[in-house]
Image (cartoon, rainbow, N blue to C red; front, side, top):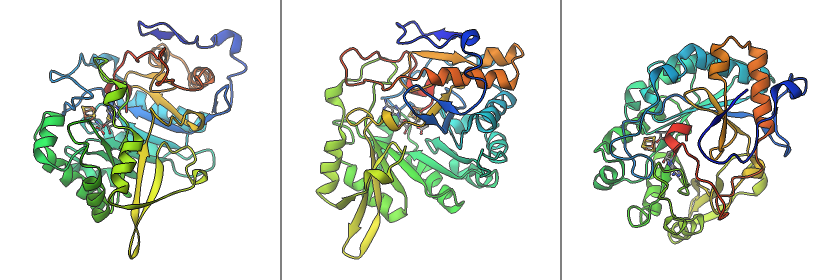
Length: 363
Ligand code: SAM
Ligand code: SF4
């Protein structure tokens, strides 16, 4: 296994394959800090049809060469290894924009045909910007997709165009309705609030989500922008979001015990007639949840990342293309996960900004 040099100082070395081969020959994806990865995030492309300004520059990014991106068969094979040999229970497809991937329905169908080590169907979801979802929701449901997360930061067309640099709000709203109608439920909606842009919309977004039966999740903005311009003081914190929501809604916190490995802290929203729905906040920066993290990641070019913020990656693509068998790919993946760091330390002054932006890692 060869960690890819990302041009930043390494925080760790991946374990040596030869010395550790017997240790990583069987079992689930455990790490040295007692965590087990059951949730696989698969990025299907680094490309996108929006240009959210906190994620991508107007001209886009230097896209991965096609030949470096896993094809459908290679992607399906690595997902099979993860589920069959490594104890993964849930697979989430992301990108870039995963709806740009032509083989998406095929990859979803192959994934949902797999059974976990407890004999259950694999749970699958898609994180998408929703453009074109109205045309594909039914086929994705047919392929067995369990549900979708659609990203939507504003309900105002002018702001949508400003944030994403494309005038496509109507497409996204149509995609959300179509997903719900196709049974891809519960539809979760992810929103990032940006200071001075849409930070007055927390309550409006929640009102809209409750009316539509969608589950809204706010995400604190993380230092994953391509130009490294993120500044902590610009970020809208979980505390600010909560205060804005509490000014208009009655929120009752769900007990921490109900959270499990979920990144969102969740509140029930109650009205005079009872429960209206819920709302979550993913406070990756101010309230990190690394101790409960159960995720492993595969980039579109076949690199295992143990964390969004990793400074090393482990190459499965070249191993696979050089003839590695499934047992060897699984052992390499286990060894990579064993070295997962205890936390990302975003709030530490010594924090190193990952050299790949969010869209290239898979958000
Ligand atoms: N294109 C798809 C989408 O927008 O849902 C999938 C990929 S996108 C990178 C996944 C999620 O990451 C989106 O909800 C987006 O808002 C969020 N995101 C992107 N950059 C982020 C950042 N720097 N901090 C927090 N969330 C971010
Ligand atoms: Fe594209 Fe998603 Fe990034 Fe927006 S957040 S530019 S939709 S990858």
